[in-house]
Each structure stands twice: as structure tokens, then as C-alpha cells.
Length: 285
Image 1 (cartoon, one colour):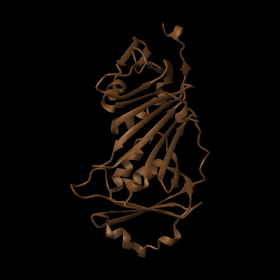
Image 2 (cartoon, helix red, strand yellow):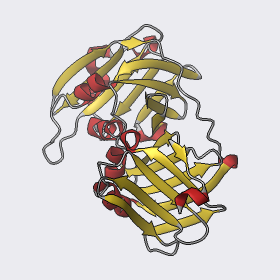
Image 3 (cartoon, helix red, strand yellow):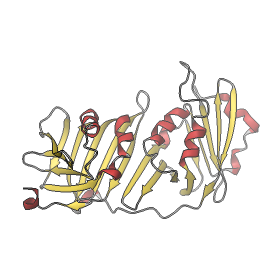
Image 4 (cartoon, helix red, strand yellow):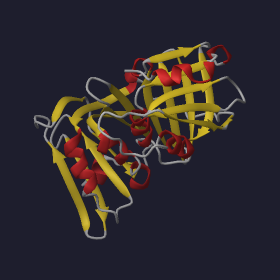
């Protein structure tokens, strides 16, 4: 049940705020944000659809966490879109201010308020009758990268159970600078390769594997991506149950992770990564 404590605190004149969002369990929100926490700062976009939180690195990789409005038990926004930059590390520390482990049946209720440009993000958290307020400075948002990754340009798409990819990433040769991903309508269908000090290593999955839920490949593509840029995706992979692997005609990679947040609640985290090197077929051999 939603906390009544937050709804009565300070008389709560919500009219001054352009965004008010309430959630029954702040730890759910922190779980989602941890999946993209590989840099200190993030850009938050708020719309009627919910929140989109974006983190970028080196203009080569971008992570987006989508927190739909219906994940909140109350969500109200007065403008078409709001955007601000925030210290994600500080935000996560505030969301976990009561600790990361809760007693059975005890959740941390959250109320999040934002009054607009130049104003702080205000968090009100309550657990077991104890209330804490946090005010986090917001900054003008930077222009985020547009990877121009559109569905119409997707060449290959594979949806898999996450558990098999977890094994692949756990066994990556850390002496290899790149991870090569081959996607093809023909054998070996889907293959992950590294090239380290001990030689090359390959992990392949047939299209009829029980781990593969959907296989839509129209042409053979082999691209390499810097492992240093892909490492942050492991956080989302660990929390996910399904993963969608897509590439477009340029070799740009999209990794979409489905995270299950309590019972029937799900959300999505997406990573975009630019290719480090395109490998031609004669170069593979």
C-alpha cells in the first residue's frame, strides 16, 4: 500500500512542482538505475510516458533506462517534457539511504519532486515511520548523442534468455581489447569471439537453441566492439531475464535488456555501442 506518511508531510503543496512521482519501493528504482551506473552524471528526461535516464561515455556508448509512468503509483507532469542533468551516484546514495537490505515487508516509500529549470530534485523517503528529505542539485542537460538507430534500418535481431549471455560475458578473455559479434542467417548463426594473449576464443549459439527465443537475421555481419565499452552492460545483463541483440547496416549495436521488477512489473534498459572495426568476410578467415 502507498505510504500515507509521505502524502501528509509538510502539507505537501504539490502545485509548485512540474513533476511529482511516487513509488512504494525506492529500491526498485535504485535497481533500475544501477544497471546504467557507469558514470557519475546522467541526463533525466521526463514526459507523460515516464522517465528516461541516459548515461554516456566517450561518445561511443550510451545507456538508457526507461521507467514507465505506470511503475509509479502516482505520476504527474505539467509540461510535455522536462530535462535536467544530475549526479547519478548521489541519487543512488539517496535512494539507498536506509540501506540496501530491507526487513521482510518493509519498503522505502519515495516521493520525487522537481519544480523546473535550475531547481533541485527533491526526494522524500520514508521507511517504517522514519522520514528523510534529500535535495539534489540539478544542472542544465548536455546534448545527448543521437545514434540514429531506427527499426527500419535493423539488419539482424536476436532475442535470447539472458542466462546464456551471462556465461559468455563471465568467461570473456580480459586480455582481448575487442569482442567480435557475428550474426548470420547461416552457421554459426550467432558467435562471440575474443582475441587475447592465449589465442582466439569463440562461443556460438545455433538459431534453434532453447536459449534463442527469436531469430531474425537477413545478412551476415561481423563487427568488433571495444570490451571496455561493453563492460558496463554487464550490470544490466546480470539483472535481466531477456536480451534483444540488434545491429543496423552501419554495424551499430543495440542491446535491450528486460528487467523484471517485482511480480508483473518490468522495465527496459538499452545500450548503444559504436563498432570499433568492421570485419570483412575474407578478413575473418
